[in-house]
Length: 239
Image 1 (cartoon, rainbow, N blue to C red):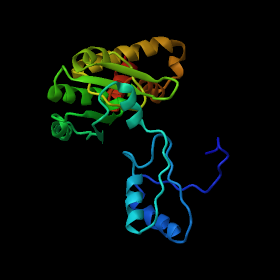
Image 2 (spheres, one colour):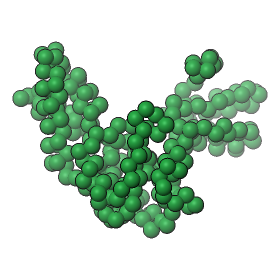
Image 3 (cartoon, one colour):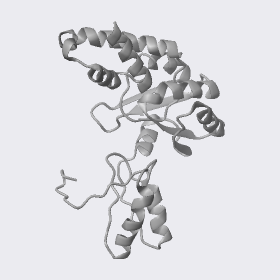
Image 4 (cartoon, one colour):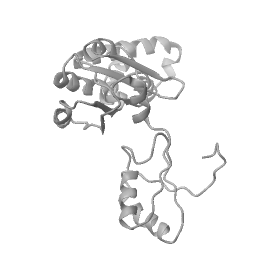
């Protein structure tokens, strides 16, 4: 907004406050005021609490005007090379493995292209479930940081990708992927090795580096769960 010299009052809107904040927003709209729903990245209301505001606005008979913009769904679909005549967008799957597996089973037989959003921190765990249920032959395309400086598109199979992803550091939002079979021991072992290399890299700074500093550097450099990062930090700092 600042880039385009737009300076208007801003009101936060998220999953936590959407129910309490919506009545006031609807009241402003009823008074004839214009509101714009914007997001830091991507299209508002796509895997985003904005859908709740749109639905409530429609229920009140207030017009909603869409403004097309950046969308990881369509951008990744177009660049993937996979069929575009039929596709299913399932957004972010559950963080819990059991529920996530059940969700995957509901679209396992889908004939069209399946689009999934996922955080890089949960990539490996999701990959284990996808590989188990969908099988190693499924063609996949992993897209990250689309339209940005570090844009990356990987086209492969679940089986081949499984071997490469566990040693690959990935940051940024990912869409359209099924990944990797990797044991918890392998993840922890690789993370500890990364932690040790960081200690060597910042050896001169180590006396002034507290647990938080090391933890933050590991989170920035690893694709694994934050709890595992913290455990690795403790192991390294104890040595």
